[in-house]
Length: 184
Image (tube, rainbow, N blue to C red; front, side):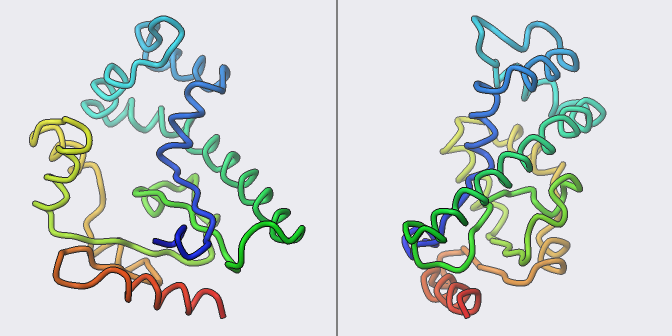
């Protein structure tokens, strides 16, 4: 919705997956943590990676210590490019950019890269169903991953804005209100 309003949006998840394929140093660092089976035919095996990191918190922490600083560097380069586009008159009309990251608050490596934080919340069952449909994961796999994440209450307490996505609260007015507040 923010992109439809002209706000440049950095999708951290997609960009991270892109880094796995374009950053040989990152791939080598991940292989040193997760083993040679991580790469098959020159491509990172995300299923193998997930099986290793989501069952061992120590490995997860080591992987994140490598991945998140690279994501932050990529975001900052992306943000600087958007700012240059705006200065040149071709970057849209929004006075801000968004980093979409489900884990922003939980990752110290990303701290300080945002001026404001927006949290989107929805009922747990809705979240589980959405992830299962999107990823093909089982309910148990989704719940295991969610067990590594912060509660909504904790994220809300650290956020400047909250959007409720529960089929009862219309999304567009919530998003537009935030857009207006940020574009002052």
